[in-house]
Image 1 (cartoon, rainbow, N blue to C red):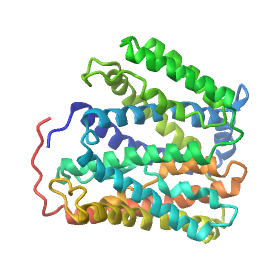
Image 2 (cartoon, rainbow, N blue to C red):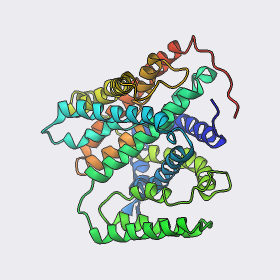
Image 3 (spheres, helix red, strand yellow):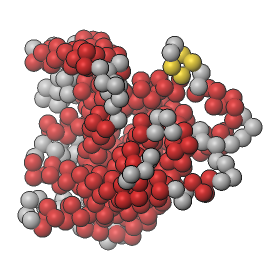
Length: 386
């Protein structure tokens, strides 16, 4: 199975980022529970203008992360795994199952409670962590499995973005939203006019971000919207989209996501932290990510294949799909991101959720790694021509 150089670069940067994220998370937890706690937390609460440094990271830097996700999704739609409806249907359905079933399980425990707004938490997949764990299996992993997990995770993140836009929006300002969409419209016209300079898109993107920030809709949405008005052309390395995607890979993988992890995993682990794991919210998060993800992905994929709507990717078996479902249960970055939106005024629930997310992601990752390690023993992987 032939893959593009850009996909290979994306996979390589994301898998390396997963290792960096593990290190940053461990460091952040250590500092937050050491004698340096107050100084460390003070860094993230340091005021810059009207907001804290943490706020600018979550609302500003993460917009660039979503821009990269949007560019990768655009590439997949035009010339990648999602360009053929028959090929696209499999990871799309997998992603839908991997969102709906976890959300349903979460609501089984939290419906009608103050934490029911956290249903979006177990719907997410952390691309960097998931690909990072997958990479530990080395050359035994078929390219079709790498492409499937990547496409699944990208679509999953798009679903998370839609959830953020639809369910985590407060005090909508139609005026500011209208200006943001108007700027997007102008950039779309530039796209159709084949304006090849990146400058108007960057300036317009900053404007979209500012007005989206003040519209009530989370500002990171502007990153994805911007991606789809940046000219894709023929997808060659000379196009703005390809250049920007290539340029953003390393800053996002090795700066933005690690900084996000450092800022949002500074959790004080109290003596009663295990009590929090008995909370309905924690149970919903754990079962959603560890049970709901693999179950939803396997079930929905099995149904579309059974009804003849699509086929299993070449070289893969159902046990591989099920094992990959556990990899998708590594929510981490995206799950924490949604937690911050779901429980804005509930700091205790944020802390409980973060601990549950980290434990759930760790368990899902270990199960996925062990399961795939066993199921891939009999798979003969042929080196792909890149």
